Length: 225
Image (tube, rainbow, N blue to C red):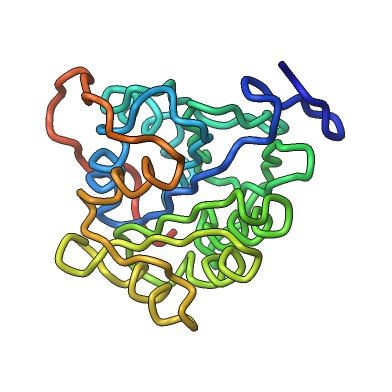
């Protein structure tokens, strides 16, 4: 069953999907793997990864995460419709903006600031277009990107989770969101975030996390660019 909205067609359930944004910077690759690895493949949500990366580092993050995740993972394309049960990685050198048709639009960046890709831009546009269907997760990173977007998500009825200090390699990004006017609904250890997402999305339990074993993740790009 599908339903048309603007120029997009929402798949699978006949309604626009819930959208989970995983925002991070320095130390974020390990955190992303720990959140994505336990998630079952049939969760009723689309997942969008925003990690600060140097523009010339394109193409690295998506295949790394695909080896640590039950869901299909790829770099998002301009105008692509968000579908449930998939992970979309915002490419380096682009900002992503949500549209009312359920797609992501990519725009070029000229250089810092702001952080790139910008979690604030994506989350703020999702707050307006998707409202309570938005879930923001602020993970390890330096700087304050994501804090303003978290406020927008909160004010438009969405949900905001943040990693706690003890489990964050770099706590500045989660701390900045936590400090903003009660915008964060829950502060959790990184290893508890997957279970919280499953509960929010209406599933009873985590998946079995049967993903391929790989070498320990290393850095992708450079944070805070």
